[in-house]
Image 1 (cartoon, one colour):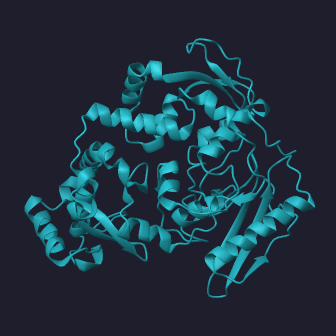
Image 2 (image 1 turned 60 degrees about the vertical axis):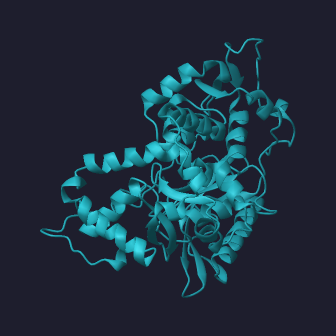
Amino acid sequence: MSLPRSPITAFAKPNISPTAQVPLRISNRAARALWLSQQGLASPPTGPLDLPRLIDQLGFVQLDSIQVVARAQHHILWSRNQSYREPMLDACLARDRAIFEHFTHDASVLPMSFLPLWRRQFDRKAQHMARAGWIKDLPDAAARAVIKARIAAEGPLSTHAFDTKVSGPRKMWSRPPHKLALDYMWYSGELATCHRVNFNKYYDLAERVFPAHLRDQCLPEQDQIDGLCHAALTRLGMGTLGEIQKFWDAVTPAEVRAWANRHGPSLRPVLIESAQGDWTPALAPVDIETRLAALTAPSTRTRILNPFDPAIRDRSRLSRLFGFDYRVEMFVPAAKRLWGYYVFPILEGHRFTGRIEVKADRARSVLTVLNLWPEPGMAWPAARHDRLRAELDRMARFIGVAQVVWDTPETGPTKVR
């Protein structure tokens, strides 16, 4: 049954206390609606597109090279506004300098305005690279200076502009010396992604990519930590300390605890009801009641989400809020997969209704449905199938193929789990 599009009374059982020390109780229905709203998945994916604002709302968009249907970054943005097309992200990065590329929990693009908060992350990732053992193969400062001088003189270069080779036995993830040097300088913030061509990264001097007014801001480290924690909680809407820490993976658990202790008066303690009916202590911004009061029911528009979508990245949070257990199986041996190589969750309203395995064949101009698995206990009437077919047709238009072909019975599932 779909939710009424009405104010917070449809979602939460606030049990509001006059003091901020008594936790606000947020029902599971309200928690789902709030998270989907924060993620840009509560409203229909239509209307004018402000791409920098959308990325700022999300906080980051993960980059991935796998293109079973569309690369993750493009699919994630299209899921929220179907006016989006792939060249727009490159223009936002390379022409408008509205975003920059670096490493959260994985390679991602972030709002350029976050740059002053990210200086410590440049240092953290460079130190991590050293601790991971790559430092013994890393070209020394003089060799790195030669590479940097070439970029200064010739302009942005990709790794293909260099020809050093891996010495000794080649191991998994081995990288030639020039690639190690480029990565190290990129992690440390000496170099920055200027643009990409066919997903190949082009490195340029940071001072030619990052705007001076942001690059020259030197915030104290504690201010950077505070800013990252506040920004994470703002985008989560509500979350445990662990969820705040995992949002960027740019602060430690101890740093999040210290931040929460420093800023207790500006945080609201809450209890969040899980899909299983228990309650988890968490924190929310001080304006949480205003946010909840403004909520309306999520759109029943069917969405096929990318496996790397930020709405589902935190699997524990996903399971707790939605009762939906999901894992990425690209790197799981085929015989041990529960579902398939690249399986997409299906979101409808405030519920995950199933999973689908689809693959694009651009040479044949076909989007093929390989498998469909409705969630256990979830009815799939004709109207739900119609909504799925309509979304598949929209996805086919997005990637530029002519038709959708079903290789599995549309009434599914074709595999029983």
